[in-house]
Image 1: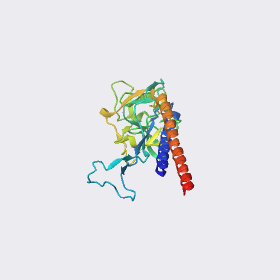
Image 2 (image 1 turned 135 degrees about the vertical axis):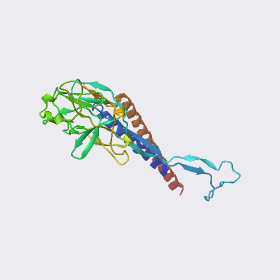
Image 3 (image 1 turned 180 degrees about the vertical axis):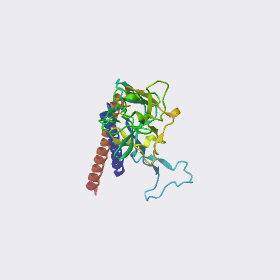
Image 4 (image 1 turned 90 degrees about the vertical axis):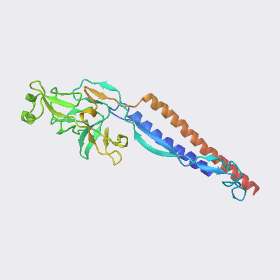
Length: 283
C-alpha cells in the first residue's frame, strides 16, 4: 500500500510538469518566433512479482518445474525524462515592415547581448537610436561582419540574407569600399545576416526574451553556408508554433490525469486506515 502512495505521487508530479509546460506555451502563443516546450516522461523500472511461501522463500525458483514462476510486473511510477523545445516551423505573418525578417527553415538569427552571443527565431526588429538593427530589448542583430547599421527605407534583405543598401545615404560611404557590389548602380551589399544552426538544437537553453544560448550538449553555433541557409523573407515574421486548441485539450487531459492519481492516493490511504483499524480490533 505504501508503494501505491509513491506511485500516485510520482504520477501527480509528472502531470504538474506537463501542466507547467502547457501553461507556458499558452502564455506565449502570441509571441513571435516562440517555440513550444514539451515534457517527456519515462517509467521507473518495473518490479517482477514471484510466488513465495509464507516464510518468504520462493515457492518456485527459476529453473524448477514451474513453467511460470513469475506472476507479472508491478509498475513503480513515472518521472520527468526531459523538457525539450519543439522547433517545428511556425506560420508566416505579413507585417510589411522593412525591419521584420522571417526564417523559413532551420536556423537562427544571431544577436549580441551583454552575456555574449545569443540566438533567436524572433525576426521582429527595430531601428535603434544609432541606426543599428536591434531586438525590442535593444540587442544588436549581427551580420557576418558585425552589427548591422542601416537607415529607414534604405535597405533590403534578399532570400539568402544579404543586406543591400544605397551607399549615397550612408554616413560613411567609404565603408563599402572593397565589398561585393551587384550589377545595379548605387546599390551595394552591406553585409550578410549571420544565420547559424546547431548539431542538436533540441538542447538549446531558453534564456527569456525569445533568446537561446548554446549548451555543451547542443554544440557550438555553426554559421550556415549558402546551400544550407533557410529562406529569408523581409516584411514577415514567424508566428509561434503553439496550437492553442491542442494545448487546451492537453490541459484538460493533464487535469484529469492529476485527479486520477489523487484518487489513487486517497484510496490507498482509506485502505491502510481500514487495515489498521481492523488489526487493532482483533489484536
